[in-house]
Structure formats: C-alpha cells, structure tokens
Amino acid sequence: MSITRNFTRSRRVAAAAAVTVLATTLAACGGGGEPGGEEPAEGVSAEEIEAALEEGGTIDFWTWTPQAQKQIDAFEKAYPNMTVTLTDTQGAEDHNTALQNAISAGSGIPDVAQLEYQSIPQFQLPGQLTDLTAYGFAEHEALYTASTWGAVSQNGGIWGLPQDSGPMALFYNADVFEKNDLVVPETWDEYVEQARKLKESDPDKAMINDDGNGAGGVTSMIWQAGGKPFQVDGDTVTVDLADEGTQKWAEMYQQFIDEELASDIPGWTDEWYKALEDGTIASIVVGAWMPGVLESGAPGGSGKWRVAPMPTYDGTPVNAENGGSTEVVPEGSDDKLLAAGFLQWLNADPESIKVFMETGGFPATVAELESEEFLGFESEYFGGQKINEVLAGGAENVVEGWQYLPWQSYANSIFSDTVGQAYLDKSSLLDGLAAWQEENVRFGEEQGFTVNG
Picture 1 (cartoon, rainbow, N blue to C red):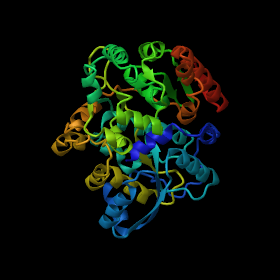
Picture 2: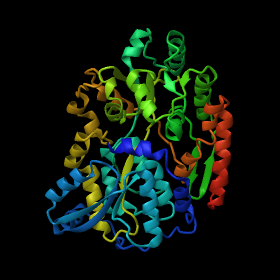
Picture 3: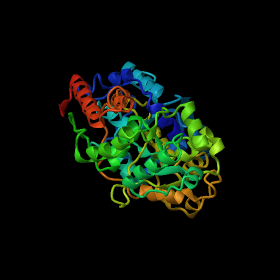
Picture 4: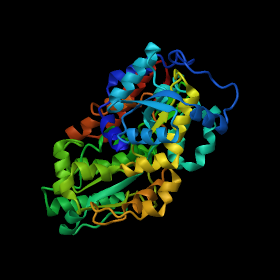
C-alpha cells in the first residue's frame, strides 16, 4: 500500500536531496524551472476541466504508490481520449531527488507527482508547485478529514488533494498480553506500567522497540502530546524542540530508556518484523496503514494482533497523523488543465478511491471513513476484529495546527545522529532534542531562512 512505502522509505531520505531542494528556496520564489502550462487568468470551472478531459491528451504521472496502474486503467476507461504515462519512482527518497533534478533542469518535469505531506513545503515555498485554488479545488474541502486537508492547503494556497491518511493507534499482540496478564492501556502512564509488568513477567519480551519509529514516529508522538515545535511563516521559521508538548512526550518516553523497557531491535528491519511476528515486541504505536505492513511483513502473527485507540496523557481521546501523501501539479507541467483534472479524479472520484482502498490504502475521505462497509470490515489477521472502527475513530481526534519544517526530509535524515543517540547511549532525550534543534537552526539559516530557535 502506498503509505506503507511512504513511511518506510521516508526514514531513509537522503540529506543531499533535501539540500538540493532548498538550495534556491528563497531565491526562486518565482518558480522552479520554466512553466509549460498557462496559468488561468480567472478560475477554471468544473465544466471546463471535464471538457478538457473528454477532448483528451497525454500527461506524465510520477508516483511510488502500488495502486497507480489500476487507478490509471480506471481513469483511461472513463476518459478514452486520455493517456497517462506512469513512472514508478520506487519511493519518496528517489522520487524527491528525481523531481528536483527535473525542476532544476527545466525539462522532463511530470504533470502530476506524488509528495508526502511533509515534503510539500520543500517544493511549494520555492514556487515549484501550482496553486490549484484557481481550478476549483477549494470546493473539495468537505470531502476530507480536517488534518489531511490542512496538510494540502497551507501558505495561502491549495497544492493537492489528500490521497491517504495515517491516524495513529496502538497495535498489540493479544496473545502476549493474555499470557502475561496485561491490560490494554488507555493512558501513557498505564502503557509504561504494563511495559514494566511485561519485563518482570518475561524479560525476553518488550512492549516496544526503543527507536520510537524514527523521526516520523517521534514527531507524530510530539504532535499528539500537543507540541508545535515547528512554526513556519513565509521565510521565517521557529524551531522549539523544548515546548510543552515536546517535553511531555520526552518525559514519558524517557522511562522506556532509563528502565530499559524497550527492545533495542531497530525498526523496519527483518529482525524487527520477526520480533513482531513471534511476540518478542508486543506492541507498536503507529499509523492506520499498519495492518497491511503486519500482514505482509509478519504473516506468522495472524490471529494474534489487535488494535486499540492510541494511549493519551489523561484518557481524553486525542490523536496525530503518521505518514500520508498527496499528488501535486508541478509549476513546470506542460498541461496544467489536464493535470488538475487527472489529480482531481485520482483523489476525489469515488471509483478511484474504491480502487485505492481495495488494494490496501487507508482513506482520507470522510465518506469512506464513515461507510458501513469500511467500518464493518472484519480482519482475519486481527482475529476478526472490526479494526477500521478503531482506526477511523482516531481520524476524528487529530490535533489541529501541526506544521512541518520546510526542510523536513533533511531534519529526518539527521535524527539518528541527534535524538537517536539517546536510545543508543541510554541518555537524555531532551539533550538529543536540543542537539536536533541546533542542527536544524544551523541548516535553516544556511538555506537563507530567518530561524528562531
């Protein structure tokens, strides 16, 4: 499923790609590369978009989502005069590098491209994306969850339509919980207490692995705790990795480090999948796309796993997004009208969304999240549990106001050298966060931003 590949590949995004993306951020506010399509003088109507699709043409689409070809087949069936040329970019790392190279060269730029939500500012701030407001995209706001719509509509424009979402949840091995007389926690205090109980009962098992699922997992946990460490206002960026929410998360998670309650098996490795499969790692707090990851990566755990709401600090339901993507129209697209029409169909048309969900995608659309068929799905892997009831419920409680850094991919790439050292050295997360902040401030200033931090 696409978001699975987004998430796992995103923790390997190269720092060099981020540097390339940002090298001309402040100098290139007029756009990156020569635009191939004309900007509409006034708004484009839905009828005009439909007429253009009916007349037909050819567009290039870059993505790494495995659902893409089936969606294209359905689109070309609906619009026989349209041809979509697909380039599978394999994952976010290679994709972002290739896209930036094309934009910098001013040639070979796709008409539609996938971007992770966290990567939008890196391409939008230099003027490299088309504002889709003029194409009537504001009319689609009600289709999507508030958090995913907020991700694509920022800095005064609409840069895409949400493809998927990743509200967080607690995935746990029910067999391990039952054998060790553990209860499903509702709060983080209870989660820590159950981790202590598991260590005492079976020292060979751990409640969680100790890297916090990398930068993406940690930022999502900070988000849920109410932290807003990154604030962006044009070319002014504030980095505060010691704000109240960030400290709340760090103080809670520090207990796993100090008391050695977590496994040291690195996340997203073969050893990690095996540990999830055999119960060596008893739970993971992660995005709603995780069922597909468990089914493919830890098939031997079938029937043992369950899903519960994400623990909170006081028992009040509150959540964060973990992963997710959109599609965008680069400023250099050769035919922005057809590109906008295809993008609109891809992420707003019921037929396309149906294809996406049938192949494992977790929706960002309210109608699908609330549908009886979706909510009533009984997962064999999860012992017949109606897992979507839990996962969709999480989407209703995502904290508003989160922002990513304009250089988030770079920030993620240096996470292991800063915050990650706390896991390795059994040292202070707050110290690691301070080091992460210092490096981000330095990098942002080098790129020409005014950085407060």
